[in-house]
Image (cartoon, rainbow, N blue to C red; front, side):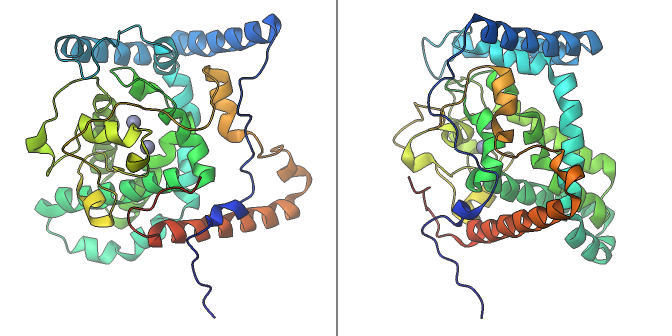
Length: 343
Ligand SMILES: [Zn+2]
Ligand SMILES: [Zn+2]
């Protein structure tokens, strides 16, 4: 008999690997603090030695966004040198290194989420699409899968641990978009693998991924414009600021990055006319430094050498993990509209 989906409590409780995190800052002596600083410096310095790509991104965003933020601020009095702005810039500078690790993780996620299987299945249908319609249909598919992946990353606790780093910032501006765990970039992997398997060109799919990532950086800007006339058509800073809001009504809303329609269709659209987002951040405590943040989602996963030492046990653990994640995906898809995470 088909097992009934229960909406309370969250089936996520069954999932392994989601360790309880300490709610309070780790107490470190000066040696501990020095080690954390040196490691951060080594990552940023090494990445800069390897490539100036991250520095270029910081420069371009600073030039384009900061003057507009100064002239038309959303949160007046929020300075460019607001708390933890250096942390966000460090993420950008370290990106040539972090993106390398992220790419490996993205291939892993792309392969093992099996989004390419339905992609292969619709390949004959895609072959019938006239080439002029390919970009539009490809875009809609890419954006819809992106919506669902983003929603899973919020609503499945194991995935949330990775995405929480991006949401840990309490100030949104030109630099906030840089803060993300390198494995958070895996968000675009299922859509990417699906489209390639379905027969869309790598160039077109890569372009969608780039648009999503670049637009994503701009959506965090501390700019006043509501752009209400754009709300029915495209994601705006207002929409993404609500996505980052820690107000109860705004939690689990506005997952769309490029267009807002998936949120409207699947019941997660939140754009109140009478108020504006004021408070951002997450409930859990996340250490305000890169090293602890890179470790944050990995705590509780155990020693990776376990796979080598006990390969058969590891396969069993892997299957159980997979089954639990699938159950949670089903829960996320079927949960009532407007539902909020239980406390
Ligand atoms: Zn998010
Ligand atoms: Zn964001």
